[in-house]
Image (cartoon, rainbow, N blue to C red):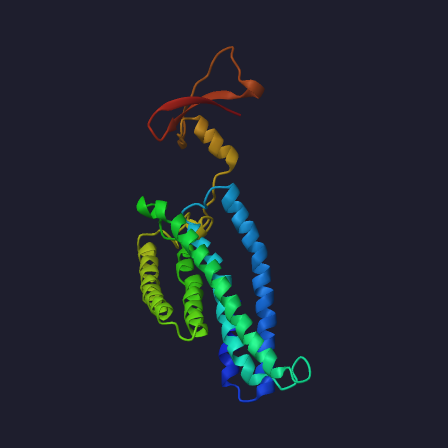
Length: 274
């Protein structure tokens, strides 16, 4: 997804026109692969949003990833298209068609970028709206997915400046890009600060927390264990056998003995020991 923007930035710095043209054509090809594959993911993403609930709070920042493919494609097709008139040879795509092909490529790149800019803004607004409820209730604890607040929106900010350039330096859109840049830098600092705070208060990088749930020799309970514990009123056995009670003339199944065990709440209950 970032090959197109790189090609658009590299081509103006190459003095050889054939080499610059090869860079641009390669950038269009690889950018096309990335964006068209992302369309398949878009379909699955939208289908899930329509048929299921929103992702849980710790995973919800990942919704901003949907902004990235459109944003990077906008920056790529516009910057590469603006270089085409300079690098295409006279007989590119037919005798005497070089100048026309370059101009058509420039215009199509600008319009394609403008269409995708609207799509990127739509995904951005959907992602922001999905966070309103959990942020208002204070249920948005830090997770590593918070970095999705930064990287995909970098693509949208870059795309906004590319759109302003395509529209002959449109001043309001440039101001919008500057405001997005300031907000992006502030968000980057906020996410890094919350990352440090999460480490200090042991929300992350700690056994049984987020990505480290199974680290350090800890083992999660199986579904059967959870059901068994839930059937006991949420109490778990913390002590071994307090004493063994023998019953004359009564035997448990398979020669089992009835014993009493002590729970966390200090109560005692009976169960069979084999």
